[in-house]
Amino acid sequence: IKIIFVRAWEKVVNRHDSLKTAFIWQDLPTPLQVVLPEITLPWTSENWENLSPRQQDAALDNYLRIDLERGFSFSDAPLMRIALIKLSTSKYYLIWSHHHLLLDGWCNGIIFQEIFIIYQALSQGIEEELPPAPHYKDYINWLGHKNDSAAEQFWKKALKGIKGSTRWGIESTGINSATTRGKEQSIFSEEITNQLNNWAKLNHLTLNTIIQGCFALLLSRYSGEDEVIFGATVSGRSPEISGVESLVGLLINTIPVKVLIISDQNFLGWLKQLQQQQIEYLEHQYSPLVQIQQWSNLNNGNQLFESFITVENYPINSELRGEKIKIVDVQSFSRTNYSFNLTVEFDPDLSMVIDYDCQKFTATDIYRVLTQLQNLIENVTNYAEQTLSEIIITTTNPEETEQLLNSFNADFD
Image 1: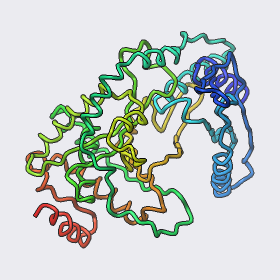
Image 2: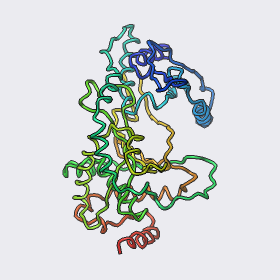
Image 3: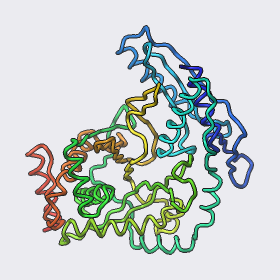
Image 4: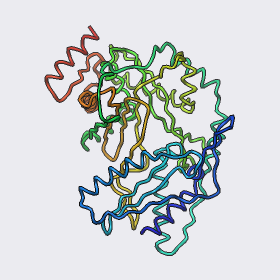
């Protein structure tokens, strides 16, 4: 498996410009992205067959910690490495480490699908030739021709009047935590996921709109503000770009989303209004966040937002299957500079993960927020005709619910 698997990986990596990229910036006025003609993929192989399952888990944690600390040198391509660790006769850990500058989550499905095709061919002694891959430079050229003046006018208008990033109101500076980042996760049932999908289709809404709306409403209740701002990840994959669905590279972007909470507006009408706003935002989703920041009135070093949402609806799931290889239990780990990150996945059921700064938030507070958000999303079908001020946000703990009702409802008195 190893020799053919390595060959399949190297064939795929050398098909795509972005995966052969180095970044040169020292002593240059402008950093350069350099695509090498060909690269050799760094591989590590280990055998943990003699370890117990518990020992294998501990060894994996230690391996990931050390690997994360290694980082990458921008000028040394490729900015990735692979480890294949044997656990038993037919089971391996595949650890693929790469810098986020190379690609986004959408690309995973493209890459693994190509690996399966090539691996299958090589295992039969055939040299598979895939169609030529789209060139990342074509995307960069297209991006360079976007109308900056129209984007500047849009973002200045969209962000007019913002006073700063929206805080949850539960942040603390006195938390002494041994870890820097924490995670809390929740998973929706298949029944609830189907109900949400059906309700969204019935009302011509996207699940992204529903999630952003519920998140904005909860953030408003916590912050006490009727205008909130948070970040949202957008795909950046315009249909104007030829072959964009199979393009490997970093296309995603993060943009600010400003939401006005209109207390006497009914929930469904408000969601439809939010969706129309999203459509307008997406027309200008290609502007770099640093440029949007400059166009806003927050040029004093303050961030536009401290929380952001990523809704992952990529062509990859927790089980990838070829004829001879099956990859299961796909997990990803990444670093971020924001203190509160919500990631939503459909795999196939809806799930949410909050990755947070342990120096600012406690696990108890994050769990409470996650529970309230899940309850809010699960009950959207009951809120359609209610006004925003009438929506009661509950937790699974009755005492907490009563306490929160007294706190939240005071904001609307």
